[in-house]
Image 1 (cartoon, one colour):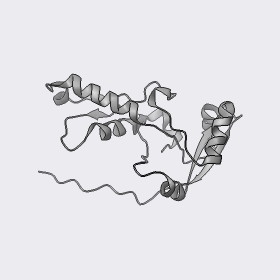
Image 2 (cartoon, rainbow, N blue to C red):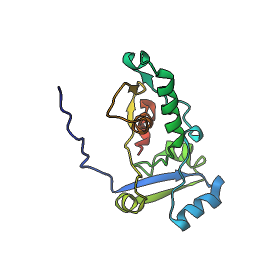
Image 3 (cartoon, one colour):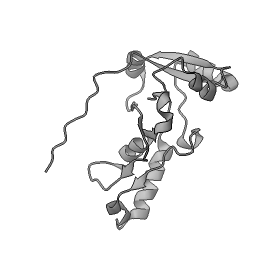
Image 4 (tube, rainbow, N blue to C red):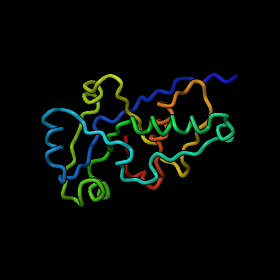
Length: 164
C-alpha cells in the first residue's frame, strides 16, 4: 500500500489581484467598504467548460452512479467562487474581466486576506491542463472535496490568468 504525504506549499504570492468591471459599481463599492468578497456560483462563471470532469472506469460502473453524479452536482452549486490572479498588468485580464480596460484591478495582501476571511474559506491555486479532472471512487474524499478539485482545474489555454 502506498502512503501519500501531505502536499505543502512554501511559496505563496504576497499579493493577489482581482479584475472587476464597474458595470456592478455599487456591488464592488459595497465589497470594498464592508470588507467582503462577492463569490459567484459556478453557473455564473464565464468559462462554459468550468466544472466539467470525467469519470474513472470504476466510477462509471458504480452501483449508485446516478446518486454520485447528483451529489457532486449538488455540491458544485453550493460553492461560491472568487477569482484572483497573481498578475495585475496583463492586457487579456484587463480585456476579459475589467470591462475592456474600463474597470479596476483591486490589490489584496494575501496574508491579510487569508487571516481575515471566515473559517472554512479555502484557496486553491488553479491547475491548468489539457484534460478535465478525472473523478474516481474514494472513501477518503467526500463530494465537497471532489467538487473543489473539479473547480481547481482549467484548460491550459487560460494559463496566462495565473489564477487562485
